[in-house]
Image (cartoon, rainbow, N blue to C red; front, top):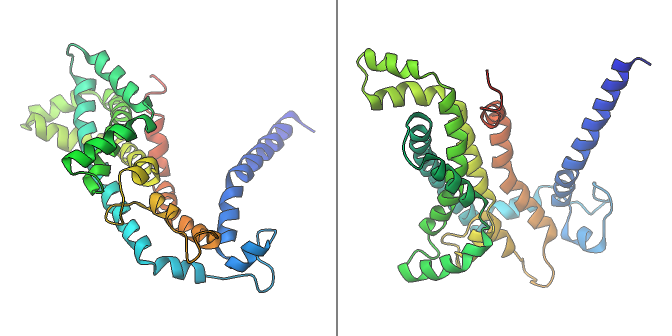
Length: 281
């Protein structure tokens, strides 16, 4: 057996093991979502439900007709999209200034942004809870959007600044020579060229907001602003001592679909954004 063939076999086996390890929980929760509650309670081993133990799409029908879950979807969509748009807009302007301009404290700004991104979320829940209750932001969309923007802005700035540094300065100068203002050159030349970075920053921001549980459970108390991850913890069914595992699995699958669709649709832009600036030349 040649060395190349051994290398290919080893790579294939390695990729297969990694995929199996990563996709096993996904396959299991999808299987669980198609089982009936009785099958889960009595024990139904394996991925496929036994005879008479399957609920089919009944779990999904119950989830998608549950009023509280639909409100949670609305809250997540509004809060996550709003936080993404505001965070990326601010990060684009900040990253452009950091990449193009020379000013005192430039490294300090980047270091501070990195420290904020690494700051533990749990340590801020208590102060935010008291502050939001005092100023009236508790259990509101803005009460969630502000923390989301604060924690995703540093990562978006780092991602976009790497893209702006790669864009030749001469292209902006050529646009200004042709009569464009600084704002027009930025909006019509620089931002389109940095589109992969903008998409990456937007998707990462959306992921963080969509998957957040700590802020969602701590800064809301009703269905008025509670997002999907927090709403799932209140999805107890008719018997609070016997959690409907199959319904929870169906709800988790529904909540995961938007993330999967975004990753599949923008996977090339995500990879381009994350690898920007990694290689010089």
